[in-house]
Image (cartoon, rainbow, N blue to C red; front, side):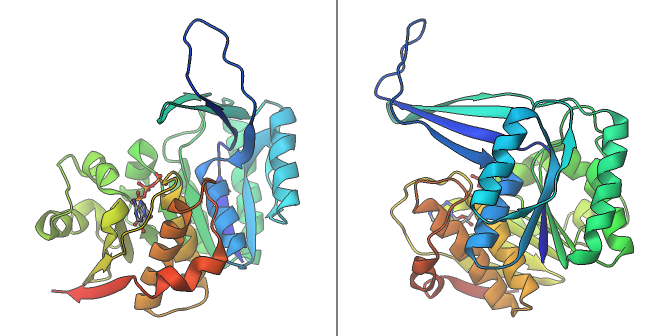
Length: 311
Ligand code: ATP
């Protein structure tokens, strides 16, 4: 079973309006509310891939109740640390072809709550074969919190896929013990390494060979419609994808992580792992929902993803 971690989940609310009026009343007819946060997108896509998944993290209050209710409705097993604080709402106003977002920060956790979560995390590990950690850390937790989770997983020999950015990602990479896999996009790579990483092979190779990334088994640099560049141990792969009619790219990175974890969990070949990861990313972009795929379309896209080993 795959364990997905979401430390700061949310209820994602989207308000479509024809025209967004500032300093005025905006009435919304169709409201869409989903259990959100990057890790929950990953969990949902893993479940849609019909692989066993357990979602964990920290939540609380009536918003936390709603998240659990939504996960139960989708038959996604979950075991979150419940805290005495309210989880967050994240609002996206969709107007005139634009998306204006209002993101609550979410609860500030105490160091005791952090410790209790780490205990819970350690207790869940005997049930799982892979861990995915996605997104940002809630306020109050130390920036090396993911590193602590990584150490606990490594003691038990369980591989961890990290999809984060900024300081929490940098901290995970500062130690000798590295995550099994990371999935940055080029912007996150640039921010992490302090130089511009673009879609050119030279630039990508320089990035994945950076000192900070030594010892990571899989580095999947996702590049939107340009597919991905990958270093697996000391081999490089370029993955190209077909042109598609884009509907909603938000959450494609999460869907990619989901496909990647599922294929690893099924002990697939390198080629199949990469094709699966790209296909779930693409499938997310052709649906309106975020972190949502239609598995019936899987083979149609899978066959047109090309993996090329390069020197
Ligand atoms: P997000 O932060 O929205 O989750 P990301 O920046 O982490 O996304 P991307 O590199 O944009 O991740 O996308 C991940 C994968 O999804 C790509 O490697 C590709 O397979 C697929 N994908 C994303 N955008 C497109 C697109 N416009 N056309 C086709 N496939 C796409």
